[in-house]
Length: 561
Image (cartoon, rainbow, N blue to C red; front, side):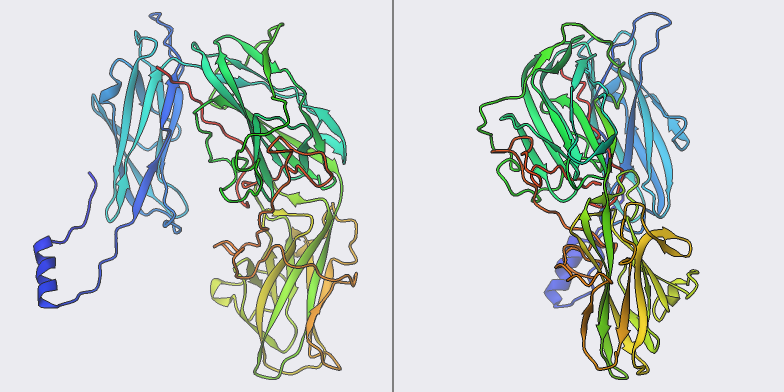
């Protein structure tokens, strides 16, 4: 049952007629239920002792307004009435709360906690005697005090195609400029043909494809680019296929730690966007290829049946996609940026502190989405921090933690970068400092590196450690106001990433590099062969975009009547 607060229409009209006003009641939050829109099941073996292969369905709540988590007791009701004779349903024993069951309903109660999305999981298998093509649906509704939950329905079909991507034999350890073939192959292990397929390739910034084909388009920017190639025709059950044309991957000059996600799905079946290595947000692309316009190279990427069949992987939910991680011998120079400031007693001065990447490699944490770098900022004597970025947390002078109430006025701050720093990014954290006492030449410092309990240490990819620190000088002898470059003395590039409040800063306050527009092959092909063109960049993702684990997950379309 969904609970809603209502106000009498007659009473509301009376208040308007009398000219009275009352404070508007806060609208109830709306929590959409999320789950698969469709799923296909393998046919039941049909024998008395045969057991159907089960598929896992996960349902959970989602809401952009629920930043503090979901509180209260949530009741979920699963209507099984339309699955009679089609599928057998049971709760997944390892991931569920206790559920009560009737003939056609499953009721599960979940207690919401901060930081977690209430949900549950089901296991579905085709019913014994269910015919190929049998179709049904299950609907999940929910209720919780003080909120509205929108339901979700999953269409269930017995039988269908099942596309399985074969694992690529790629080389993981590379040098910049190294090329390798990408011999993609897949199979249909279902019992019906797939009517057209789409190949999806998601590569991080350091990897690029050399060929361009008219039936392939690329979208993305910043960290991940996603290429989709469409193939027409029927791909029959039990058949195996491979590329008929070359596909070559090259490690660019900015490669370091990169990933490639690759998968296959039936035309019209949408990929699951819950992965960081997935389709980038709309609006990040700026070329014809990015918008999906047809190419004009005169070549189309093609697939062909394998003449010598290889054993295909058995049906599993993740068989439609694979991932591969690369490591390229390369470096990235992180240079700290300080500042020279001037202020009288009682004045508040602004300091933009941080670091810049001087490449040549881009750097990221595709596996866990953790920050690439920490910036260690020590505040000049005689000043008090009155405002700090959200990405920075206060610590004591020895690096020990301070409470939430002690975040301003600390002598030292640790600032976390985003999970990706591009090869030309400038990362800035804006602080406001009140000058309590004028001390000529009062000094603080900015350090950048990998996180340690005590502060930072140089990254293993950073070949120059002499520019990992810079000074923050207040009221230097002789005056002067302005930014102070790091020890290299090279000019600071314009900001392409910011940890201070601004358009490119996410709600979390993390320093997030903005999307950059990648170059692609002619008229939207896979990529170009230029040294800085055709970049396949992560995220969103990833990477994808900061946050998240770096994988391409594809929704398997296994049901077609």
